[in-house]
Length: 452
Ligand code: FAD
Image 1 (spheres, rainbow, N blue to C red):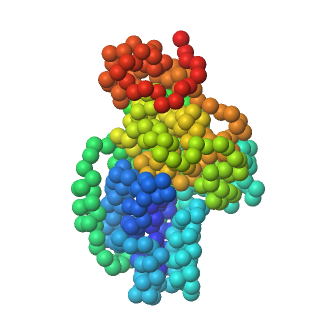
Image 2 (tube, helix red, strand yellow):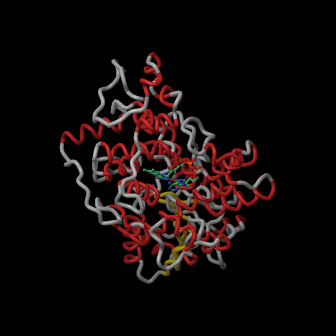
Image 3 (cartoon, rainbow, N blue to C red):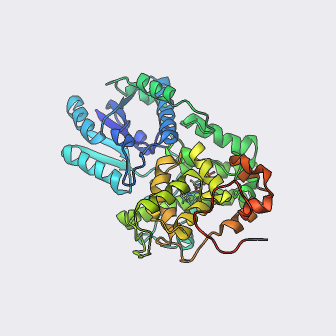
């Protein structure tokens, strides 16, 4: 018997080397997934690890995976345990010879694997690198710190084609437990409106919509800095975060689009953005736990506000969209209500927290970790390092001015008014400059200069 361990970051059947490898040969396979009790625990700054958006997207992804495997007469065993506790039991029970999974790069995940290996000492453990565009082998040994240098160091030819797996092989998987009804019950309880639905089928539906039905990819470079609606950017991030689709598959479809529809700056730009994702993933290998430290991967000391009652009050106002700056608040309200925020918005609110409020960036990063539907450890902590001046941004002094950002990206206040309709009665320039907003929150910090 082999054991295939699905993690929360690889919930798919397409382009999955660990799945492919576990079914090579004549052995039966026990396929397992864990709804780990730690998903529902609080982290360092008291945010639950999986808030409702992530939780629901994860459960939908698992349900879809379960059904896809079942379609081919296979079975996904779902447990509500810690993998490092349950897998050793299964190894014993089924005389498992080899464990397969995708590989991780960050401490929390690596610790679990280390524990598991320790408990299953005589078992072969094979990990596959599956969740980036570029394979780990095609990356220079000394990973460049600056994004542009990283981009120049990789070669498009090194992106592998997605792996083809014969799904008929799934019938060789075995049933240990059937807990899908518990997953369905949990899902029924998470009953709220959302524009995202997890799962491999939905990932491909989104891709086909964005690329081929609407050909939105042709204008991606022009629209990607938008704020409102589903179509200004790809919205692939939740599907990538839960591994419903692989970056390699998306790249293959970009090439298909370029051959059959159009090749232009926009088609290149989606690849360019996916490269940022790779970059942060590879940096997380290079810098390990520094990614999570206050001084970041640069070991840079910055004076932050003390962690006290006053700071926590400001932090809560930031989280709840009550800073008194409508452009910041609208973004925060969007995230709180949907689990998603645009890239423009994320850059703005992160800058506001760290550069204007001078609050410990890890508190913001942890809140994002809890609430973002597309939370990805390396992208989240990498971007927060970058935004806080403790990461790899070659410009230490990068600062997003809330007035300027609002003026550039939401001049007519459509986005702000969508999330804060009570501001409708005010003049738009006043909204952007937070001037004369007599009935709105008082600004929690003063920011110099505004735009006329
Ligand atoms: P698109 O513009 O369509 O981009 C396509 C894909 O490229 C994205 O899905 C994503 O995989 C990748 N990508 C784009 N920009 C970035 C970037 N700056 N860094 C890494 N990958 C990128 N992205 C996450 O996926 N998970 C996170 O937890 C996350 N946290 C962030 C925290 C901060 C403070 C900031 C500034 C950015 C963060 N991002 C994160 C990056 C980016 O904001 C999102 O990937 C993007 O907004 C997702 O929307 P999209 O899929 O429509 O993006």
